[in-house]
Amino acid sequence: MDNLLQVGDRFVSPKLDNMLYGEIAYVPDTGEPYMDFSKLHTEDYDCRTTAIWTETKEGGWSRHREVPLSTKAKDPNLLGATWVVIKTSFGGGGCAHGPHDVFPDGHHVVAQRVGGSETVNFYQSGCFVGMLEPKDISLRCGCE
Image (cartoon, rainbow, N blue to C red; front, side, top):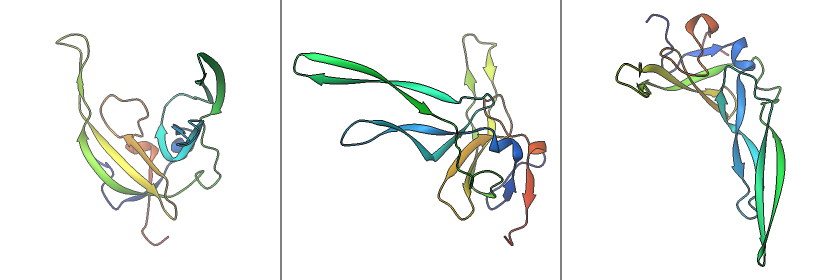
């Protein structure tokens, strides 16, 4: 497939702005859930919030509570950001429920925000959620 990103390529994608969301993480000492926006993921559908159930044990009792978390990355530095490809691979395919239910491998991209530490990963080919096809990407020169 032509126009697939390679290591060192710099790019922007308006579609990526609407696909970024964080990863659920937990505070080591307290176990309190929070959204870690340094490890970004991509989805084609809008996942605005999620709810995490936490359990606190007090003696012989357990207390459950729901913690709503906003998953959408709202950092204005991410909107319209320039990304640089730091790794590519070809894989991720597999089989589902039958011998004819095969998902092909795809071109997997890991990129880091220029001037930042955030990373994002997505596929450019294959059959995956959170794909950024070559038509959704504009290459940038390395002079920024």
